[in-house]
Amino acid sequence: MFACPGNTEESYARGARPLAEFYAELLGMRIIREDWFLIGSERSPLQLAFGDGPIDYHPPRWPDPAFPQQMHLDITVEDLPTSDRRARALGATALRQEPGYTVYADPAGHPFCL
Image (cartoon, rainbow, N blue to C red; front, top):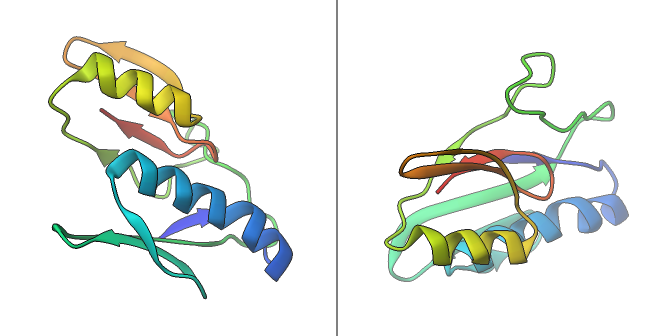
């Protein structure tokens, strides 16, 4: 479960839905549940959920321990340059590049690696 900004139905749609759409597009999945956003696919047992955060929600700021991440995904890709372009086009921000992988922040600030 990824915490997202918002604790009302309206802010949930503005916070959780865009993040669910981001990961669904990035991972080749689709939204399979709408009352609380869940993404998945027929070819993978992996499912990710996206929910509203607490009233005082603060987005993560990797690697700042004062604003910790809720989770960190390491996503294996076959073609890093192509996947990098796709992630950035979907709204990810590159945080750090290392040989063989890059750390990104998703649109809500959660870190992940490709």
